[in-house]
Length: 119
Length: 108
Image (cartoon, rainbow over all chains, first blue to last red; front, side, top):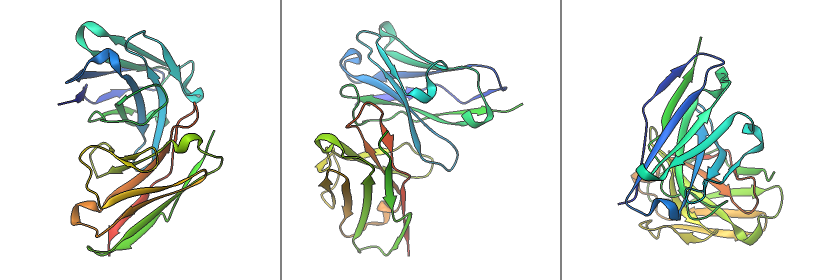
């Protein structure tokens, strides 16, 4: 079955960076985009951007441009999201999700990775 | 950026009742590119509806989506105990994807 498995919870200090991984299985990795969406505690969902695993091309939400980098390693069917210059309001659950094409709906989602930013 | 406004914020209903959730867009959503998700505590969102009215794989037919342009709705017929959750709409008709703020369907 299609599955996205993310790396474990992370704790970082303000100003640091974090890199979250998303391991895909059960489908051809390069045929679908991977998007990243975050959810602050008790809050709604916020789209961060996508990566095309076939080409490595990316598109980032304007809010995160300059701070986020999305990459992939096709040899191990894994996508990555790195967020830099972390602030306390970056504390959130970060989800990866499969996307049939650029700018689309998401199905399925990874289980989420909690990133806590605290001094 | 298209802003999605969901109403009501909370819906208190009993099992067996019908739930109607609304999602209003600040601009026209092209091609009715609107999706609905269900999220339960501690779990990621699950896709229910895409393209405004198409049910995702494995979703029971008590879930239905409707609407176009700026007004969309999710209807849940005969609420089951497992349907009590938070529901989000999402538009993908523009290159800046956005979500609504969510509607919580709680047991009355």
